[in-house]
Length: 405
Image (cartoon, helix red, strand yellow):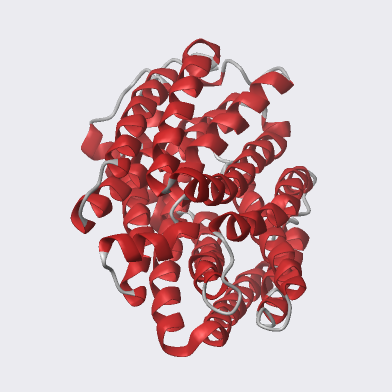
C-alpha cells in the first residue's frame, strides 16, 4: 500500500469530513462574490451591461489556469503544504480586488481570485477523495461538495448584505479576514499525506493530465455533462441581478443574494447523491438530475409574473445541478488515488469553460433579448445536456453495470 493511501482503511471521522467541506466551501465562495454585484461594478468602473459578464469570465479564466497548472500538483506534492501556500496567495488576491481602481486591475484581481480559490476548492475535494475508503468515497465527496454548495449560498448572501452595508470592496476585505482565520484552523488539523515516491517532471505531469482527457471514457462523458450543466447554471445566476435590481422591482443586493439560500436543497441532494453513487444508482440519479435541470427553466421564465415562480425555479435548478455534479465526481474518482488531482482538474476544466461561456453569453443575450432570451438560452443548453447523456448511456445500457459511465 502506498503512503498516499495510508488513511483509507478506516472510515473517515465526521470532524475531518466537516473540515474538508468547510475549507472547500469557504474557498469557492470567493469565486462567486461578484455575481450579485455586477450592476454596481458596471457603474463604478464604467462598463456596459453587455461587457460586465467579463468580470465573471475573468474568474473562470483563473479557474482554468488553476486546473491546468495548480490542481495536478496535488498528485505529487504534500497536499497540506500545498493548501497552506495557496491559501496565503488567495488572501493577497482578495486584498488586490478590494484595492482595484481600474477595470484592468479589477479583471487581474478577479483572475487571481479564480486561480487560487479554485485551486483550494478542488484540491480539498481531491484530498478528501484520496483520504477516504473506496466504499465511502461517494459519501465523502458528496459531503465535500455539499460544503461547496453552502459556500456558494453564503457567497451570494455575504456579498449582497455586505455590499449594502459597507460597499463591494468590504465584501472582499471581509473575505480576506475570514480566510486568514480559516488558515489558522487548517494549519495543523488537515492530515499529512506523503507525496508519491517516484515524482514526474512538472511538464510530464501536465501532459499526463491531457492523456486522461484523451483516454478516459467516463471522464469524457461526465465532463461534457458538467460543461453543459454549469453553462446553464451560470446563464441563470450571472443574469439574475440585472432584472431584479432594475425598475420596477429595484431589489437590494441583499435581497438578490438571499435568493441563493433557496439552493440549500442542493446541498442536501449533493450529500445524498454521493451515497446513491456508492450504491450503484448513478445512472438513475443522472437522469433525474437532468430532468430537474430542464424543468427548472419553465418557472424561471415566469419571473416577471411572480417571485414565487423564481423561487421554485431556483430550487429545481440547484437540486439538479448539485446532484449531477456529485454523481459525476463520484464516478470519475473511482480511479486510483494517485490520479485524483489530475482527474478533478480535468473534470473541472469542463466546468470552468461552461461557467465562463455561460456568464458571457448570459449578459450579452440579456442586453439584446431580456430575461425571456436568457431563459430560452438556458433551456436549450439544458436540453442539449439531456441529449448528450441519453446518447452516451443508451449504447452501454446492456454492457455496463448501473453507474458505470
